[in-house]
Amino acid sequence: MFNKYDIKKVVHFAAESHVCNSITNPLLFIETNVIGTFNLLDVAKSHWMADYFVAKPGYEDARFVHISTDEVYGSLGPEGLFTEDSQYLPNSPYSASKASSDLFVRSYHHTYGLKVMITHCSNNYGPKQHTEKLIPKTITSILDNTPITIHGTGENVRDWLYVLDHCTGIHRVLT
Image (cartoon, rainbow, N blue to C red):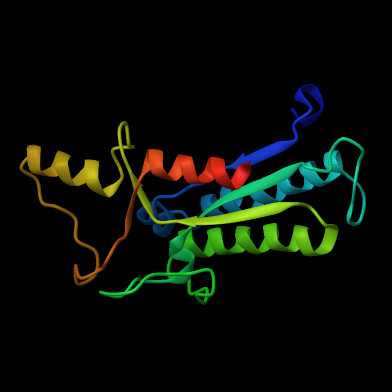
């Protein structure tokens, strides 16, 4: 794909992302989120870099944007927010796989000079969201008159981001 289309920008959204699924099948999350990210990074490096910290001619502005999650920072308290300075404290196989992929992205920048950016968004919501996600799943449960799934004590705090606002931010990071 990189050769055929001469790719110079990657926005890496691909991920297994449902926490419940990571609990029942963590290996799938390692394969997709860690190994998949590694494979994309390695191909980008091979295609864009002539040597350590030296881009091939025409690839000086090539960039790899990795879309991560705020869940790598652990649980959000009733007040406050995460920042780029927050400590990594992944609490599920999902967040551990995303933290691992973040570290690979970082390592390709520091080891090879690959131009990378990592974003850590909160939970997205919007049209056509997958039915396994919290908002559509809760609405479906209400409509079907079935119990709503509560994890832990039910006191977890989530931050939400409208999907089009997220896409606007990603476009700004890329450009």
